Image 1 (tube, rainbow, N blue to C red):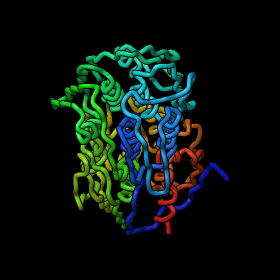
Image 2: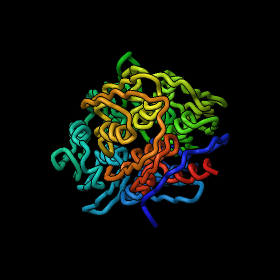
Image 3: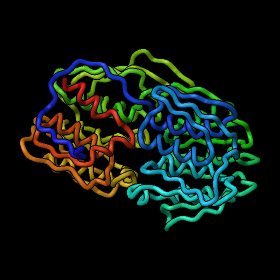
Image 4: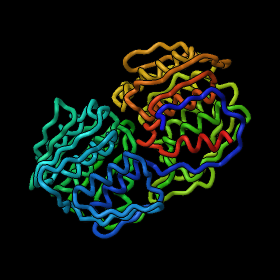
Length: 438
């Protein structure tokens, strides 16, 4: 089966409704907390992507009993500090930074050495940002010059710490939060604003957490040694996955799309706020709150006369995974759009800021980039009639999916490699594309 997709036709007008797979961040966090709960937890609509499946594989290696069926995942929790595993255990995080970083936090009390490894892309990413604060709990942690593989040998008596998370990384914050559950005492985290799924789950599970929200940061205090009760979860659709179809609809002619049951957590909808500033028509309906998370149906319509913007940096952390697809809106907008403070983009699965500029350049869009910013000179009349090849992007799923959306909107003759990369986060992506093309 070919790992390459070819696209040479734009998408015809459509008016449809779709259901997107479960939220990846919530799927991974549910599995990790369920593994440390007392009793049997279950989840419906868990995302069956490589990142989540690798999470379940790692938990199984730690002795956790897991049953995964078509519609449900059941985990028999072992309690905090309850993992049982063989000596010289190796956990493979694959491509998942969330898995690789958060699971180290779960192992702060590990009795024997455990090694965490990952694929080629993940092995290039910085892990010192999480191993440094986690070592302060008292664990013995070694790295490969700040990267994978990471080896951790826990401490019998983890001590609470004070931690300043200044990068806006939910992964770093969450790893410290998970580690804090193992301590006797109170861990204090001063964290730059970022995704708050872990905080909401802690609150729902009635764990001893106190959050003081400031203008630029949150002050989080967590008391450890509190048992977690088993819990059930119906995982909503992923806003990051939905974003590709939001942009596809907005840039397609005479089209309308409803996406049902989407997680619209305020720390995740930077893309909606940015696109609305640019003139994109997105409406929420059937609004509900589920276990602390805000859920709604999204309706998107084709949008003409898109506006260039100087994007407010306050939206960066809540849209960090969506900027590649946002850049396509800027490519079609009238005027010059400016995005800054995006150095974190180049620390993802691939150097995404560089890849965003590269895709736009191949499309004939002028850009000016620095190490943390990009200016995009939009062209509302852009239509392509040339060959474009996308490859050697470290199998970054978001580069692949952004390229597919660009091909369906702007035309041209595209050859896009490594389609298997979507298994990382959005296995049904091409199936939904096929449905919209009918």
